[in-house]
Length: 278
Ligand code: NAP
Image 1: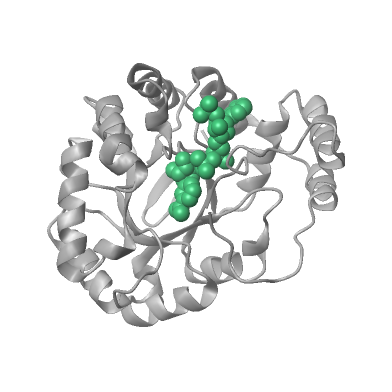
Image 2: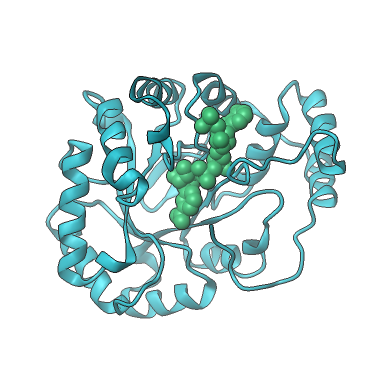
């Protein structure tokens, strides 16, 4: 099982996202998450936003009786991120998730509440043992510097950001900042949120060639590339058990330097620009 450091813990590099998971039948969604846990995809990412608590409730059902196996992450919406609002939002999430603690709790994106207030609420949750760590999401390098100036960089466990083969913007400034400051980078929408490179496109053909050489699938190659550095994690969402199984297979894929170079050539990083988000 390949793991990377995530704050003080070792966490599998491939996890499970849950945005829109509630659109599948409850039984299918729970089965997919459980199969993922069986295969080592124990980093489970959810948010109060997803299905207005429905996604957290599905996660709660899937992790029942096996909480200790799971690295459980949820997120507070920016409009709830006042000092008191963060605490109330976390309590609601814990109820939906049927647990007494989160492994990491994230500010979903920056909103109108000052970061000082949000961070004060997050620190209070940590002192109360309701969260083991906290992080941020959709933070560009200047946002990270601002949060670090308030809390200390070592206090920020992760930054969850958009990262897939056709959107590599975080490689310019966000990944370097996070690596310098020991902040885990969790890449969301690793399959472009459903727009994975077409097999007939030049990029799709490059992935297929590497996949054939490694006895893997194009999606497994993409995931392996997205977690190639010790700072990186990926959290694909899959409601289908067969998709979960394929994604878990990426944990055993080893890419060579030539594979990495071929992917770099097929999916260039592009020019620096403001952080993109979904
Ligand atoms: P994604 O993981 O890039 O793509 C999900 C889509 O890919 C689904 O349609 C899924 O189908 C399909 N899929 C998954 N595995 C597959 C496989 N092996 N073969 C074929 N299709 C496959 O999209 P995402 O949900 O946008 O991102 C992943 C997670 O990141 C989210 O669920 C959420 O937890 C997180 N996220 C965070 C933010 C943020 O602002 N922090 C924003 C977006 C997402 P099925 O479901 O039918 O299996």
